[in-house]
Length: 209
Image 1: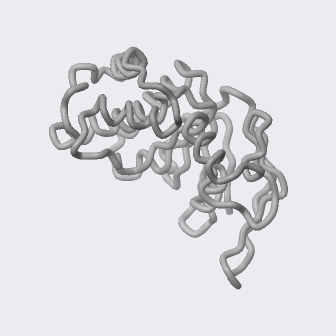
Image 2: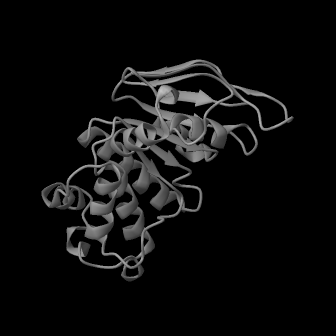
């Protein structure tokens, strides 16, 4: 169970941004919908442990996120939250396998090459395990981003604007991959976007206005 209760945040003397309470059951798939300036990025950062809200509480599977120390929070995030950004943010000097092992290391988990192979195979890019990021196409890089997000079997998988720069065909392909991976890894999925094309793919929507 993931929940946010009475969460609000203010940046200095700027207007306070309040968020309605939200409860997400394990394994559910949600669309977080909001236009630019609606507070979507703030809520994403709060959900992922990047930004401590001015008020309120975030709980993930019984753990109160902001009661943890910085070190505990880093480790908890590495093990329990997978984030897929618009751009890959891979280390260019490392192979795809090495990038995924690095994600395991950040979570203070042992290197598990069997898990790396399993995830790459599920995404259809096992043949690229020894390639470097600059040797991959954009589509392949996006799959590696998904692989890195799910490598530690997180409870929560968050995708930030994964379809905004894609045409209709590729947008639907990425959505299918995200839903497939959340199912395979038994992860709760939250896709944050202002792209209304993806709205019909979700039965659960949390909308910011």
